[in-house]
Image (cartoon, rainbow, N blue to C red; front, side):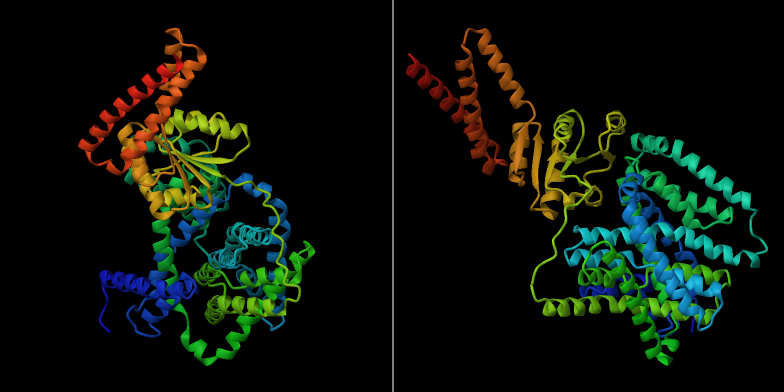
Length: 589
């Protein structure tokens, strides 16, 4: 076959992703299986469009680096500490027991104990993407059992770096150019110091004086720089990205970094799974279909039973526990990463790696149908028909999202905080963020005109949104984004002027607050008092004015873009207001 140039290869990758990923997602099989299938199809086993998948796999490992950085960003130390019991007992128990059962089963086949441990650790991990998606679809993610399942996945994410280090340790003896051990110590120490003292100030400078593209470049620089530092020290590149992410987990730039990295992570990680698909040994699958299917089913049953047993010890009934266990029973994406490192270090025989990758892929394909089958069986066998009681969530999530945290938004934030109502604030002004952080409020840096930043800020789980930015055009832009994608959210918006009020109401704002109106009425009340009005007369006068003005605004909404009509309504309104005041004076006299 003729040599394929890089542009043609890129075209094949993009075409495969565009065609197959939506198809697999349509049938709720997950994007990972779509990428794997695409890789099998365009690889040397089927269409021979790409003849050297190993070179693609080596480049695409940057996707795993990005993934570990994002995982590190999400591992907020405070959140980990609050969930320490569930993470340690359920997550640690699942990882340890599953690894032991799988490793012991492999050891008695027999294979070497090192092989058994590496494969056991790889297969004990689940697919976070698959499990989270399934729990969300089944409506249990926010329940007590969903949180227990999430704790297990969280422990697995935490364990990835130690597992990669264990695999690397098994291969150390065969590496002649391994860096001295103290290189690693220096690299980790340097990364921790830079993360602690330099990253946030650097990002603050970029946010203040750079463009959006500069912020994206800074995010990529942090990830690639941390990975490169670990690589030259002889450690895992993913470890560097993971540490950098954890160092920024409490940063107010976290959401912006996550959204900037997300497109690169998605594309390069998809390329990684396509490359894995290209390396799958389809001949081995066709030669031993029943064996590989039996191994995949055995893996899923073992992991499901282990998780169900641990949840039973936490006083969860067997049916609910096994349901959660089945959702977490497949092999995970990091199994491919671990097998790839084992292959690179020549620790495991190639046929053993190929068999393991096939078992993981088949287990992913079986997850959705087996969960659906178990759900049907459980519903039919249920006698009482009682639903599982959803226990209250221990960790209180934000109920209000404040977009723009200047003086206007801060007043609402202070009132919410005083009444113990949790909120999240997003602002793209570093000076606001640095000032507010001293008072302990939860505020993050981010461009609120970007949908991905709003999603990262948790808008999907928010009940009420306060849009308090001072720029009227920007407020209108953000409101339209929210109403287009989250029409059920209640949005309260700050308006700078009457015209801005009309535009915002026409765009669908639930409540519009004119920033100067209430203060101006208070000033008018005091002025009337100074002119000799009684308190009741002054309050009645301003109250009448408020009601009349608000009525005029409501009448003008449908004509917000007709300036002549607005002038006419304004003139008519002034005449009506004078008549109201004159009528009121006549009644008093």
